[in-house]
Image 1 (tube, rainbow, N blue to C red):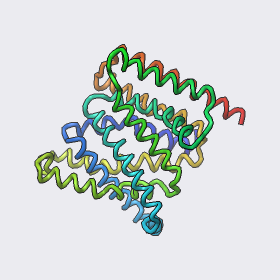
Image 2: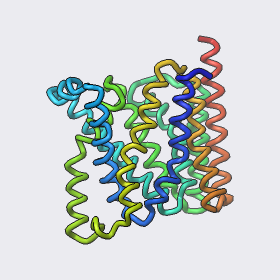
Image 3: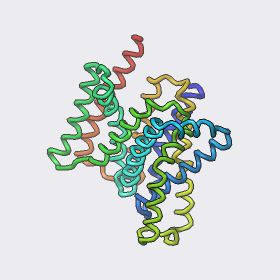
Image 4: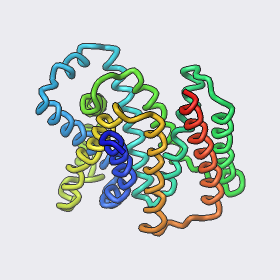
Length: 289
């Protein structure tokens, strides 16, 4: 395994361990955590850009109206993804967060078919159908809609689709995405402060430190991915991606004691089968190519 592949793997491992970090902020309002995450991610990436003297790239984007709109849409989608993920983890539903990232590639291929008119193989259609059956099993028999998992998976798949139109490096991209929604984040922080929802004085020293660290925690894995993916095959990156939800699943069950119910077992079984077929089909096409 070369250095680039190790960087991609490192990104997925860090993402898989993220529930541990967000659990440390479980006592803070999830929307407030999201707002601070946007602020400190923007600051962290801007500092990185300043050190690398990459300011001209930022100024070029700010002068381009079309690019500004694209970054705003990306910023809104990733904010929804981050916010719902934080809420899911801090309210004790790590298994649902894990399910989201097992389903994400399947949402992505459907978006590719519906929006970009990409042709799906028969196996990819079967994979998508199996994942749908797994989700519907819980809905029909238990009335349990994994809506948080669906929102996380769908928002990230749509975010990925929009990112096709972005050529900037990861730190510039994250800086511009967070900068585009920064007024909303700062507005909510002020609202929380003056309404008493979450005041700065009510936070502990460790909570403040973790909120500041959220910028680096968010940005470093993305930078690893952006650096490593250039020399890593899409097939390898796609297979390694499942390290992320697998680690989350193991954390939820064995570290945080979440119950793995019969409904979970059936839903995950269908989704895992869909993933196996999807990966096998990807490898087969890779060999033929």
